[in-house]
Length: 391
Image (cartoon, rainbow, N blue to C red; front, side, top):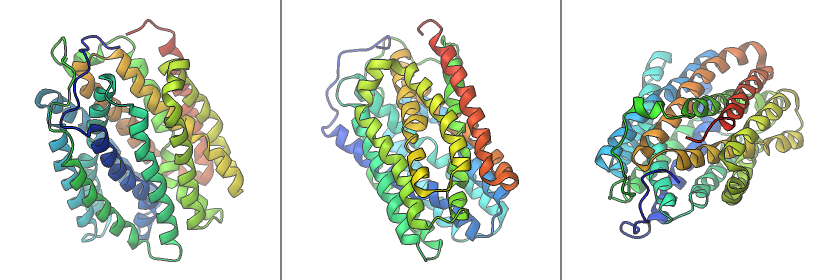
């Protein structure tokens, strides 16, 4: 366990796990619409692949703001209220997309949307892992509800879009964002750092100086970045090889169903192979997964390949959160979780999205091969992480 841990605290206000479950459902339900179908909406509005890559990359780059939100939450202990305000800004940004045309206005709105959405997930994760470390809940069993919401949203989205206008995507995101504003209001009002720290929160620079943290960030950056082609152009690639919207929605759902399965047993897996072992499994999974997605066209073979999402994302995320839990003091938990999001889901995935647009325009499905290289680099960092002394 991290240094500076206190005895388990009481559930602040009761129903802490249930409140977090509702937020994960709203947050990942919205993501289940945005991730597969937002690129389709952008293409419907006249954006080209390189432009779509930038429009998807800008919000992920905006996740660089997440550490500042985590720092504020560490000092003020009001992560729930901050999440509500950010969700309201995201709702307003989506509404504004209906009013503008052209690449530049959409680029500006994408930046605003990213700045609003980026800190919400690490803020909620910070609440959840603090509660898990205090023994009040099992992080994997709470987080799994978010994955389930993603499955339902992406499946229903595929069925709803079959033969209909992509304009439905924006309507669905407006509804989902309004729900997120409502449920974040009910997050616990007590300090996010519910474990009493033995030391004051460290500065961002001091956090970066911790042993092994840079190897850890390198591993998660390359592994997160390896998903760029899938997230940006997976739906389009499957459309171009002849799959229908319902089948595509099902493929996205299946990838997350196996993620749910891994989350359900994740605690036992982490206990058996450790956080670093989970990261190594994620790197190996990506080396196998991405070349296969470049080459196969059969629905059932693609579905089998999608099973590897349990490795490339779920094992990576559980391994990362478990590593933070075990290696970082409670006083710096929010800051480090936000840094993980900023580097992995921000810098790496944002850069990857922009690159994916260029690669997909030139190579189509073969762009996935570059993602296999990214996974291999992430694996190398994870192996280095495992070979060094404990933080």
